[in-house]
Length: 97
Image 1: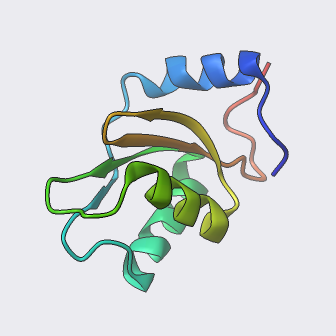
Image 2: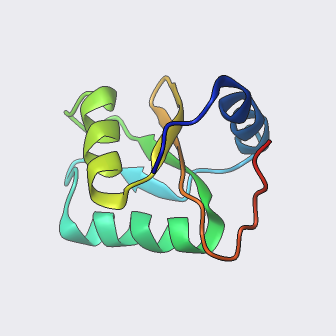
């Protein structure tokens, strides 16, 4: 996926503000099952929040890099222990400016 512009990132952050995390990363950290869950969530929603819980020893930047590498999504926001991921689908639910 090509890089998001500043305007697109602001737009996605606004949309993602009210979202609840759909994927939680804890002690087991990143597994194949977790990557499948992220993949399914992106297919269904295009824009998702991923939350790192207390038991996760990985750095949030590492986690974001791994998720982007496996899913082809873009990081719209990295705030605290929350990662906002975006990947457009064929149906195009979200129209970026």
